[in-house]
Image 1 (cartoon, one colour):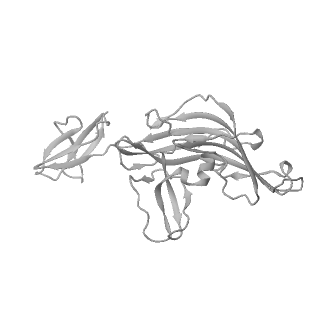
Image 2 (tube, helix red, strand yellow; image 1 turned 90 degrees about the horizontal axis):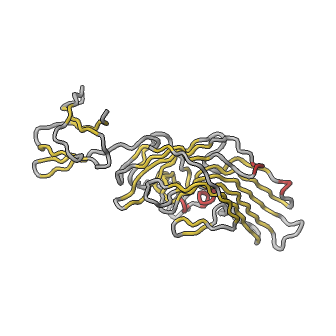
Image 3 (spheres, rainbow, N blue to C red; image 1 turned 180 degrees about the vertical axis):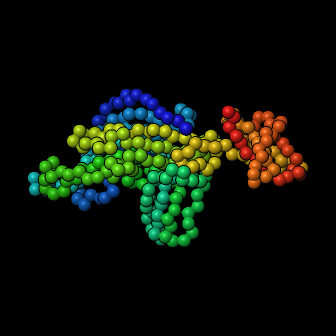
Length: 315
């Protein structure tokens, strides 16, 4: 589990701006959930890049921390002083995953062929993150699954963080502006968000979780920016394709493989400082150390059981 401390070195960039994550380019902040009913539309985004995050220390970008102001105009053509305008301003601070990062979310689909909807990405503490998921076989399908964040328009727009939206409809613009509540995953009442992710590596998918915190629960829209979203902590399982509990540190996994008349018990080499113990019974257990363990593995006879084994962190 990692607790992060860093200093921000912001750089102000004027848009239109294309954010490139992986091989796909897109304009962040401009993918609105509703369509423009008139012919004219434009989007301008001013972005303040804050931090790049490498979750697995492989020198590749996994998360991009930014805040930005996105102005989206939808208007009649040709525009006149009496034209009907629809104007949206999003003030956002968020973490934007790279394209190779998958997130764990709850997806709903009413019937076969219908559009899927992303219901939430927020996890509860201790929620199980499976190595693989299987969609329910009955309709409507409502279940948790691993999904690509770029497949969801709203998520591409606001990322993981807080967004406060200003809206104007009608022939007036600035004087008719009002601000709605946050449309992001963090807001004034939900100042902490727990999210599940997984990263592809050569040996398989590595599961993890991250906790985002909104330090300032009362951002003031007229300041022109939203501040205070930070990555408080995260964890990444060193073993590939291994389940994980959200909000809790990863644990090593014991493996047992029968080879002829023997059984090889082992755990990954990355887990150091653990001792293998065994007991004949669990009521009550009488744990004793297992001898001749070398390089996180030991070979025992297949006969003579039953034995129960566990790993214990050395003092």
